[in-house]
Amino acid sequence: MSRKLSLFISILFHPVFVNLFSLLMLFVLFPYLQYVVSNTLKLFYILFIFITTGIFPVIAVGILKLMGKTSSVLLDEKEERTIPYIITACIYLFDYYFFLQFGAPALLNAYLLACASIVVLVLLVNKFNKISIHAASLGALMAVVISGLHVAHFDVRILLALIIFLSGLTASARLFANAHIPQQLYTGFLLGLSIMLFIL
Image 1 (cartoon, helix red, strand yellow):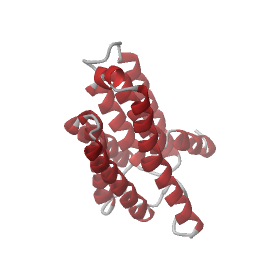
Image 2: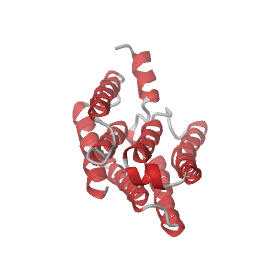
Image 3: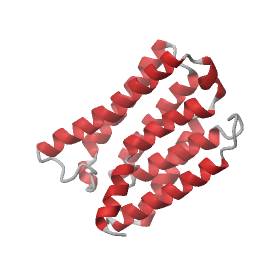
Image 4: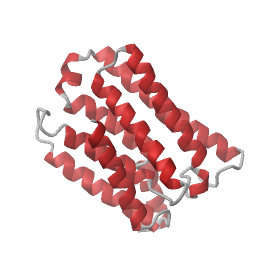
């Protein structure tokens, strides 16, 4: 795999996009969110969460890059990850609190709490040893699909197989880009998987 291809895959399966897909999976897999929540509310939830937890952190990283505080928007150096992770964790916690007050479905609140917990734990681990947030987000996606396995109105086994393939592809890209070693990828994936499964 060439460095350009590994960079393309790393951007394509950036946690911002993977987390958006995880959120969409909640509304696709779980009947309550799929059929009971109105389309207007679904759109509000999805847009609000994507803008606050996806777009805002990307803007923050872009500003840090312009200020010379980071060498890459992919935050390949673990020392560069602290501020963006703190910002992201705070935003997830704010969204969790906001949706609690808003009366959002418990499953959605649990998802936000799980995401906040994953980012906080990744931040703490990262202080001692670099860990893959790409892998953690893919592990969380796997956990969302596994959680919906017995309630979804369709067979999700193909979806699970696709996530396993994409997780392996993304992990390989991170290895070829020299962004991580295998241990950091395994740790990230298992952390995201276990936390999301536990809280959902």
